[in-house]
Length: 371
Image (cartoon, rainbow, N blue to C red; front, side):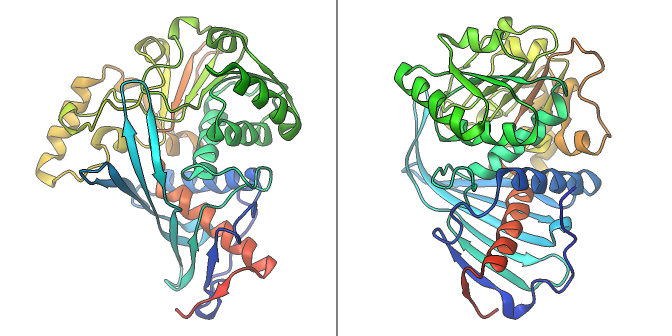
C-alpha cells in the first residue's frame, strides 16, 4: 500500500506550487514511485472510470503531442501530463529527434483545488540525471506488472537494451523485488559493458554483459526488453517453462491496421505471445482502440477489427485486475507469462506527480502560485 493517507485539505489553494526541472531532480525514490503506481492501479481496478486512455495528435512533420489524463484517489490527485516529441520511424527503430520536457497539471481529487504544476520530468533519487519520456512512470509500471506476473522466487534478470529506460528499469526491479544477477545485452558491445559496470554499483546487484540476446534470455528467470526497436528483440523459442517477459511497448499486433502510423514498434515476436499462458496489459482498451480518437459509432468495429488482427485476446488481462486479485497471472510454476507496458496511463503520472508535490512541500521547493 502507498505509505500515506492524505488529509483532504493537504493541498489547500494557497499551497499550490510551480516546480521546475531543477526542483524535481532526484526528488523521490524509485521504490516510492513503484508503490504509488501500484496503488493507482488498485484504484483503477476497483473503478474503471478513473483513467482516460492516452491520446495523441500528430503533425505532418512527425511532431506528436501525447495527453495522459486520470484520477488517483488514494494519492488525492487528479489531472494530466502532456508531452511532445518529434519522432522518426524507420523499419529498424523509433528515434526521437527532439523531446520537450513534460508538463503536469495536478489538482486535489477531494476538493478540486489546484495542487501544483510540474514543468519537467521528475527523476529518481537513485538516478537523478537519467531522464526518459516519463521514464519514472514507465519503469514503475513495468515493475508493478513484472511483480504481479513473475514467480516470486525469480531473481535473475535478462535485459535487452542498455539505454536510459533500461537503467531506470533495473533500479526499479532491484528496488521492488529480490534480484541477485542481471545479464544485459545490446548490440553495442562497449555500451553493454559500460552499462554493466555502472549498474552493478548503482543497483547493488551483479550486472554482467551477455554475449548474445539468446544468452541473456536463456540464463534468466525474468526477461525485460527496453529498446527502441521496431522489430522483435528476442525469439520466443528461447523461452523456458516458468519464465516471465516484460516489454516496455505493446507492439503493433492487435491494433486496427488502418489506424497505424508508420511501421510501429514491436519488441516481442509471435512465438512469445503464442507460448504465453497469460498476457498482462497496462490497458486492454489502449491496445484495442489505439491512441487516436475513435468515434462512438466506430467503437464496436474497432473492437472487432482488433480481435480479428490478434489471436490471443483470451489470454489478455488488465494490470488493474491483476493487482486487486480479480485475475491471476499463473496457475502453474511452468507457465510462461508476458507483461506488455502498452502506453503510459495517466493514473501513474498523476500518482507520481502528487508524490513529487508532497516531497517538494517537505523540502520547501518550488514557487507558490495563485490558484
